[in-house]
Image 1 (cartoon, rainbow, N blue to C red):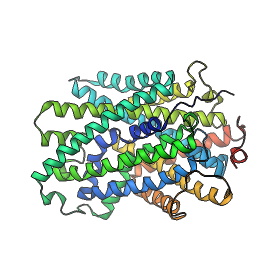
Image 2: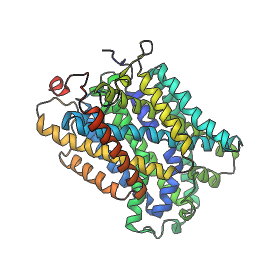
Image 3: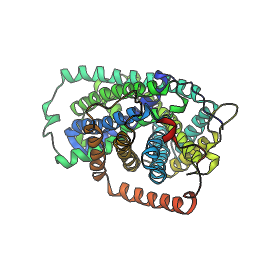
Image 4: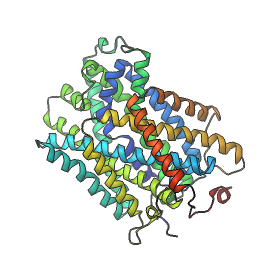
Length: 442
């Protein structure tokens, strides 16, 4: 059987995670979440970040001894078997592709605005052109893709750091306590609903664990890369939340898609500074679509190998060593959804969040199960304060799902029903092409 090439190091893997976390979400959804939660969006960021961090710790331990491509799918398969792993993989694949489509539309909006392009055609071409170009890059090789991602990461971090530096200085000179009062302007429920929406900006960390079969020494590299990616993004996001509330009027941000651009226009009248922040939003969107393809296509590759998707998904290019069928299909899904959704990133984000929270629920449950069923398995990284961390992680995932929009719950339910129908009538009796990893890793 063909094998994926192991050529990604700690920085490359962390770059993929940071790229997928620091994406269009922080450039767009931070304003939407602020409109929902008011000044308490600062706590919304904190709550969403802590919940994601709990799952990140569980994923770090699991990735230290389960190195199969598929991450949450692979963990669930080992802990709970074929049925639940199918549901987890089914939702995760959908999350990556639909999330990539939403971000492609965001990219198109920024792109057409920056270059003064009007009409539906330029918007459509930009939205579908981005995933096509990045899909080709992905087929050429994951090493080349992660090199491109690393450059994108540096640009985004520099842009946000620059914005935070000037924004922080501006805030010290123009601090207005009225911006922060009343702090719970929309109530406690509003704060939690804001957390449910803003959770979108943290979910990319799982991409790091999706590529374990392409990572050098994954038992050590994946946990390090995961924690590095999360530490960097968590600090940046909390600073963004404090400055966003301190500079902008939260009442005006409910439907605004350019919150960081608005900050730039307030703190400086330099057009080049505003353009640079807008350009960084394009880079952010591009890196998220690239990382979505990296993560999503590896999920479908793993499911194809286990015959939970058509076996063609496991085909690997002999020349480039990449799962080209999975990449092509993933690009098509992104292109289709990008053509169907315009300016509805808040709704799409909630749909993606539901699926992500569902899969992260099983990451935490898998850790608990495997600690009990495989106590002697060597783990190079162990979750601290066990079992508090995975129990809180699982409970908080369920709680946050409750505060998502009804539309997200309905769409997710319909998607689950479709998946269940496919499983029971098409894939249930098929056999995996890989051996049971339970025995291989004990």
